[in-house]
Image (cartoon, rainbow, N blue to C red; front, top):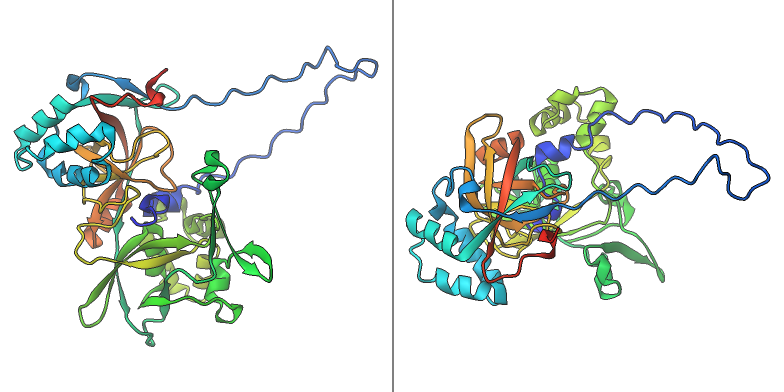
Length: 408
């Protein structure tokens, strides 16, 4: 959504709770190794062997019959998302034939779509490094928040565009192995220093300045808009503008739900977007301190109003309920995925064809997905409640060589 959307978005419930686990216990004091003053290497205390790195996730080729209830719920509903993938990947060798063939398919027919996938793709089950096939499925969405196109007594929280003085250093040009890392800062004289933190941005006297796209009515709503990475701002006259992630100030995200738990303000099982907002309404004097405890800050840009969803990491608009965010280190962006999970907070199956078109900062691992629910209040309620177990099968074009990940 986006920044790429998935580098942030992730997910009110996950992002609020991800860091809420109990703090680690203090380690026991180490037992002194036996003294051996006369030998350079003590035979009674051999050097410990290094802990092996965990195995990476892998993909295992399988048969269509192994996908539970394939082709799932209305496979034709995923066709618009597949066409978006073809818009991004259609010129790549592995996708050229597939996307050319897609032009001849009746995308409104479930039977035709099912036949297309079975004849053109091979299913691979996603397996975690520990050999398990179950993983976490969360949800995200686009919020619609109240605001104005100019500052008023009510609308006084700015949605900033990217500041002119924000420096972004892409390390991949010098170190290809660091292609996913960027440094952000600003010039102070001839020295690059860290960029302004959230608290410094909020302090009008701190020297920060940037263009303002709109003004929000509620500071917590704006905060969660930044977490989701894109959304809409609705003005009093009914007009709306579509905004999405443009840049970030370079600081790591800190979950404010964890802060409230540490303060004793909320029990862990009651941390939610709604309860944080209620707490802010009843503790307006403490709200700035809470929000500023997360130093990370997102800058926005205008998005077209007529796209079906926000832009994901693949660079195409996301399709509600048919696009997911994945860990692109393990699953190829753009690939179709058969997702088998359940509806939020229930045992009702949610088994359907989706497209891996986004990434997210909290989306890490093989069997791990963030499900895009769409826009607005209802989508937000579903996304906020979704924390389900699920399985995933990635579908790769038959003419494409399996990714190196599959070679065990």
